[in-house]
Length: 138
Image 1 (cartoon, helix red, strand yellow):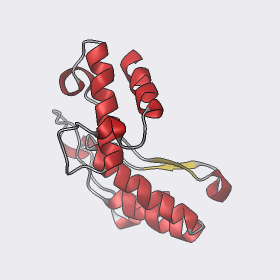
Image 2 (cartoon, rainbow, N blue to C red; image 1 turned 180 degrees about the horizontal axis):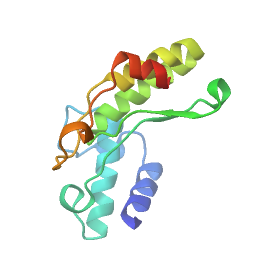
Image 3 (cartoon, rainbow, N blue to C red; image 1 turned 90 degrees about the vertical axis):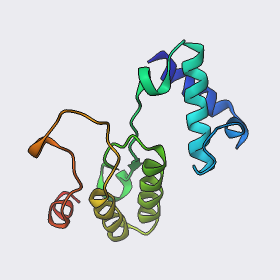
C-alpha cells in the first residue's frame, strides 16, 4: 500500500511528460507511461517489483453524480492503456449528457479486457457484458 501511495505522490509531483521520459514502452500513451514510471520508481524505493509483487489492475472510474447520482466504472484490466481508453470514452459520454454517457457506459461494459491469469473457469470467468445485460445495468 505504501508503494501505491508513493507512486501517486511521484506522479502528481512530476512535470507533464517528465516522468515518462525513459519508460521502455513507446507505444503507450504519455499518461500511461508516466503512471507506469511512477509505479516503477515507487516499487524500486520499496524493494518491490511491479510485475511480480504488485501486479496492478486498473479500471476507469468517472464521477457522474450530477447526471445519475453515482459514479460509473469499467471492468478491471491489467492493461493500463485499456483502462485509460475506457476513461476517455466515459468522460466524452459524460460531457454529452445522460444519453451519451449511457451509450458510452454500455460500450465500455461490452469491451473485452486483459485480465490476470487465474484458475477460474466456467461462469466465474470474467467476460464482457452482453448488450442486453449492459443496457440493464446502465
